[in-house]
Length: 367
Image (tube, rainbow, N blue to C red; front, side, top):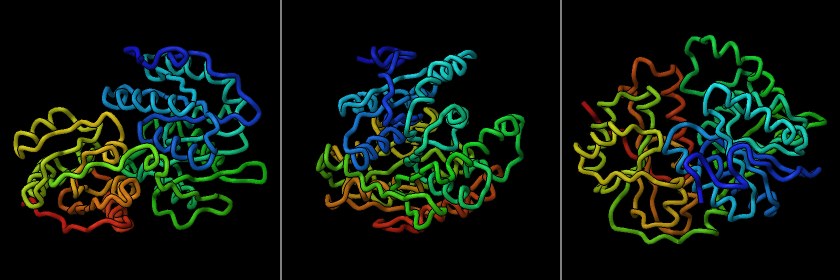
């Protein structure tokens, strides 16, 4: 059973992980989706060989809750999970790094959920691994591969174009080292395990498709309801989309398409969700697992609507053969805030334009 701060022994913070073997694999995750994709990779590529999963726990309560559930699922699959309170106070980073150094230096293969993570970039300086696997962290994978191919600095798309602050400058050497480490060489193998539409990769990088075989094998098929469901997004919270325009767009979609439930993103604020429920009358659902698993378990609407996000790529794969339709609504450029990255419009349009097996909806007016 989980404790208030993480899973119980032998996976409590700082608990000893199994001694590494010459072919041991170490996986770093910071979100539920990353852990799901680590399990997908293990099921597809590692032939169920046990992994040691390091959870670099965030502070957000919703993310922590989903991660605990995913950690239980990982243990059920025979993997070892080590929960690190990596952000639990000023001394936490030093404690975490010190506790993981021996594992990092002994592991043969490193699986990374988020190459943009400064924490992961710092930890990668300690490893001597000869093989690196990057699993999906949603649509950020598309940006990561483009930046790697172009020799650019690793920075999340919604921050790109802004001024570099003191923290950015301080971590720049680690980001540069990570880009070098994730560039294949004669002594170093690199692969990308992804459900995203990655048609090309830099020379030497192997692309391995993720078709959500683990999810489809373990869950479902779901019971399908007559209503439609809408997937929420954190674009307001990241400062990309104006809150008023977003609220109006959700209300319009709900009225036009008969939406009854709103699946909240784990980063959406309580205040925003309360206002959505009040204005639209939608049932707000805060999933305790990644949406791919929730949808596969059911019940789920016969139609799922979404704004540009990872799920427009992953849900058609997870729900293949069920008859559920996934539809995506474009983000109108007028919804973007003045603080949005100059790349926001093009990136979001690319997410929609490259989605396969989805129905395209015209952007809804919010004027």
